[in-house]
Each structure stands twice: as C-alpha cells, then as structure tokens.
Length: 188
Image (cartoon, helix red, strand yellow):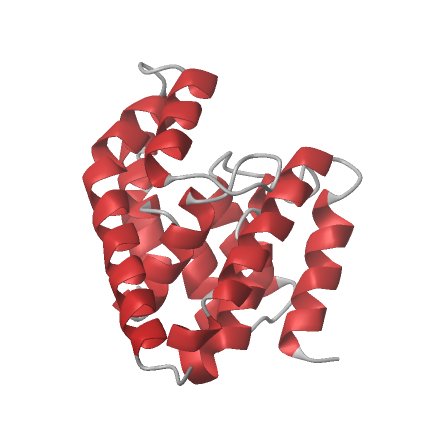
C-alpha cells in the first residue's frame, strides 16, 4: 500500500465513526491537496497524505494533550512510524506553533518536531483554510470567521486563529500566486 492509500485508510479508521464531520473535513482538505499537484511536483503524494491526516489527533482514542497537532504527530511517529515529513506537516499544520503557545506547549512542539519546507507548510495551510468543516470549498476569510464564531473570540482557539490570520492569508496568497504561475505555463 502506498503512502497516500495508507494515510486515507488510517485517517478513516481514526475519524470516520467517532468524528464523521472531522472525517468529511479531512477528505475535503485532501481533495484540495490533490488540486495543488501542478505546484507540488514530487511532493504531491506526501501533501495529500498529510492533508488527510492533519486532524487525526482529534481522534478520541489518541487525544492526550487536547492539542490535536501534537497528539496526531506523536501518534503518527510513535505508533504508526509514518514518513517523517508527513509527521512534521501534521505537527505544524495551520500555524500550530501559535496555538501551542496559547496552550503552553510551544517548546514541546518545537523541540519534538522540526518545521517542514515553507512551500509545503503554505500548501497545507491553504488546503485546511479553504475547506469547510463539512469538506466543502471556502475562502480563508470565511474559514477564519467560521472558526472564531464556532469557538468564540476569547477562547484558546479563537485567540490563536485571530493571531494567525495574517500568516494564513499570506500563505494562501503565496499558494494562489504559485498556482497562477503554473497555470500560465501550461500548454493550451
């Protein structure tokens, strides 16, 4: 079984029954990742695997710290022996260091997991922040608004996502620019 197939199977096993909406979101994020193949090159399968696994840390069977990027990355590293790059992307997806700081876990996350290549970090931010909780397509602005309204502006997640908004918009803009440039070079 290839990396992507293994990732889809594991994510489904961990999320589909206990958290069907989170599973739908993960499928949507993976679909967005697949749409970025023109700019991902040889990292396309890696990104699709990270995308479908990015929220695996929400699974009740592995959630220990309550911080899903850290719980998911530890699970993928320690129990599943997943590709290190996938693990790092899951650990740091969608500006996780900022949320880790809010939770008092920044040093743990940073010490355990290196950052992955900036272009891939941007791509996963883009995929996550352009996908609704139900797996549909949205804009980063609407996604950020949805997160703040769901969690509340004064919660850990609400504070973090508001702090992360400029970084999220910048990442989405960089991905959009790369896609536009890739499309401009495609033969008609």
